[in-house]
Length: 383
Image (cartoon, rainbow, N blue to C red; front, top):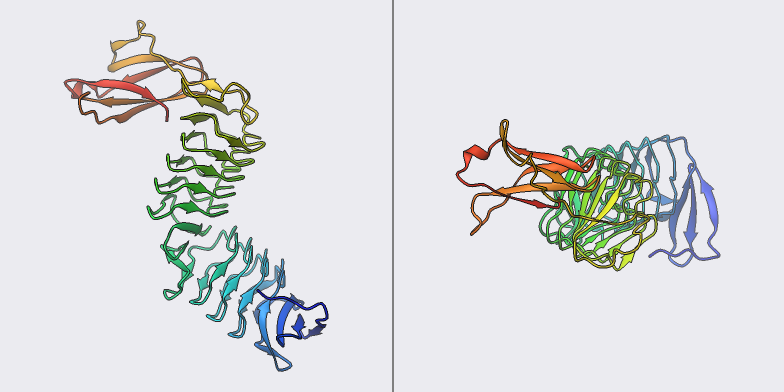
């Protein structure tokens, strides 16, 4: 880590303000004062090596289009290029070992990023909100980080660090090696409509999927124990989510501003820790819990929990009617019930054949394929 002495002298030369650390005899660029465009940071100033780009050195320099960092630089400080909205290209040499927090955050025009072989530390949200960035490339000889299909991971691929905001494709399947989805890993990935989280994942980080406004389908597996602060904040297309019984912590604002969220289905007891405002702005949401689950006697995240208890009344609508076999299902408004079918109860293989979302107290299920099977069994379950 680079420390500046209290006696360091701040001077200005050409387009840079910098500080000289009198202990190490090296320079930290503290402020860029030039007119922008394509900028090359000098390796030395007055014979002294430039080794660090400091905190907010190019902060919100909207006229900057490209920057070349010399081989003398070993560290890039927090928010060094934050909100450089016209920055399209950066050359980071292999000499760099440390990339700070939010270094390229909100660089919406950035189209390429290569991490060198010697980088050993990358701060949170270093590449967040880079909406034009299709891929993050890591030098294959880097011992700490790697890239797989343009997505940034730690070397053993147990932590997904950053899914680039400009990556093409609407569906993404997270690798089975991943145990943790890092803070802001998918922030503002507006192209994504579906993400598959494997059973290996135990933690979903703060703001992991925040502002994924097209995300409509995400399954949280039974392995996950922690949903971070603002994890799904402002996922406006998310209309239903199932919370496994493994969850013990839900952070503040986890599902806030999910304006189309109607059903949140809990498969177990109420989590031991629930943050504040987890459903703020999700005004149409209903929390459902299963019979026998505990801890649901009081309001939960500002909402009143409702027992998930659909039933088939077996009335005149039950049986073979026009074009199929069907039955009515009665349930609470906003509840979702999936109808599964199988042909053998001894060794059942259940397959979903219908999803019913209740906008009143009754919904009708109709199976047009029932004549294709000699025997057909049905069940209701949560989504």
